[in-house]
Length: 241
Image 1 (cartoon, rainbow, N blue to C red):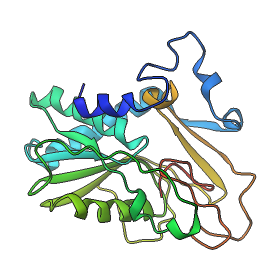
Image 2 (image 1 turned 90 degrees about the vertical axis):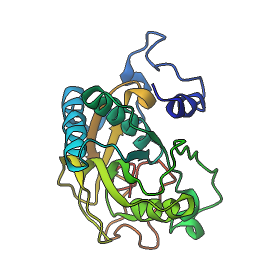
Image 3 (image 1 turned 90 degrees about the horizontal axis):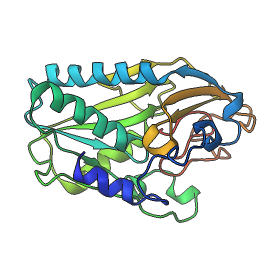
Image 4 (image 1 turned 180 degrees about the vertical axis):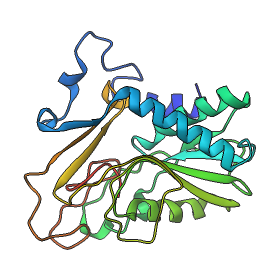
């Protein structure tokens, strides 16, 4: 396991252990309302999708010799390290992976109270001249990715930037398109996409359900719509904009 990921896991309350280790069922750790949502992507499907993305990155980058994977907290970080592990297994060489906090680059800072900064962990090799693959769980409006691109400029100048997401739910508001997608999931603005990962939630799943609090007629980013904090599910979507 990557040292940067071990550090990230250690920052969570209760240590880096599996939430199921105490013997409780993973469903008990789910957020309120998860029981009313439909599973649209099961653990085995998630695993296969990540293996496919890992191979696609290797093919597109000619073996990933200059690749650095940076996960967007929260769930983009374990996804980045899972991809790195799969790529290492194929190529036999370590693929650097870390995390990229976007808090101070979000375009909704003035709409929300002050929030705690997240964790950025850049591999020792840096990103200058590298191919950086940003990794996130859900792609929605594209605003989270835009913030990630701005944050990336603060730490270096990569040769190229690519984007890998587990779920693309559509409804883009910015001209952003992923290079690697685990699953394209057509949704409405009223629906909530919630990604669960073992490292954070005790299980792997993607859940889809209705958001009863979604204000009718409002679209993402419009005044009056509750905006999520870093890594929090959107009122009409997943953990990412």
